[in-house]
Length: 284
Length: 160
Image (cartoon, rainbow over all chains, first blue to last red; front, side, top):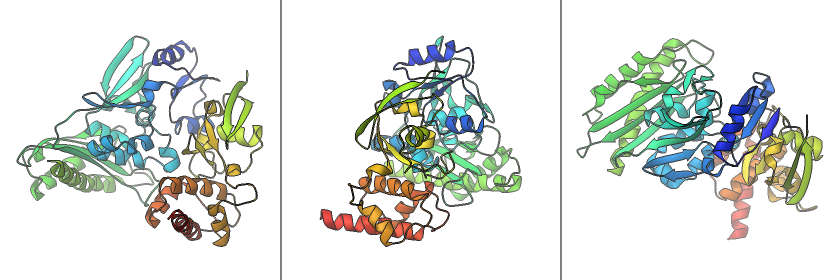
């Protein structure tokens, strides 16, 4: 195995594209090193992205652009970003322990493509896009198009995520991420729900997007038509919960049954939407 | 396979080492630099016994590659006491009997130190969440949490 730590995105992509064997970018390493140790992967080349200055920054340019090597801890230390996207920050904070959050990144969580990834539902709800840099240049892709199966992503050889963009949205907007785990901390989501809402001047839901994790091989986007134009009254929340449960396609495993996951998806959708609504209203 | 030459600082002292590209920072600390205070528990970032700081940030050394340390500042348990004088957290762990076998202790101390440097007045809940990635299989957690809370209280008094 070779280890490289280039200082530009172009150099990193050239290294990844030029490697005849298997090559991986390294940002937080909290999945990569574990998979190397278990023997699941045996890279010929690892390219550390943390010496690339543009991949370490959080910049507001008509939306928040978060470098692919920015850790969850750094996201949570960025007060303006946390104020705009509290749900994204709480999801990033739920990824592993303090030690893991000090390294783990949004881009890594996305590309690792675990069905239970905590930050993927909230990024999908946020309509976040990933800027992918490859040998032929860059493209901006909706985050939900990156994971294509359990542990599989849609990136071509030589490509890597350079940054994640959270698009600009009106002031009366907020978000929330909730997950169910069998214990208080340090576990893998049985169900995860991310929701992003924008209210109109009268406090009615003008825009809503909700995504589920851990209930299908990849993130599931839920139809939120039922809550548009409402103030999230009980009937609207019932309809949203039913839509979330209907969208589930889960498996039975040691963490939860199909029936349990389906019901919890509805319950968490209701709660997360309510929290996001209250947060958005506070900003109004 | 050619070795990688790395220059870094451990506990403020400059160090140089050669390592293989596959080696973790934990391997380097223990096997190349002889700093065996940092323990290996799980090797997969679940137990926190290899907690160190990397440029001031609390991390698991088993999830950092040795070669990544180039130019970085690393803090380990060996740098915690001042000569023969224990760090207040170390003394409180003794006072509260917050250890038995001791394998998890360096990780708990490094993690707790990182917390108190960030927040000298944490709630018990904040301490428990911060230390949730440090596992102890013998003492249990109550004595550890009490030792950290007690240290924080003393620090606040001496800073007042």
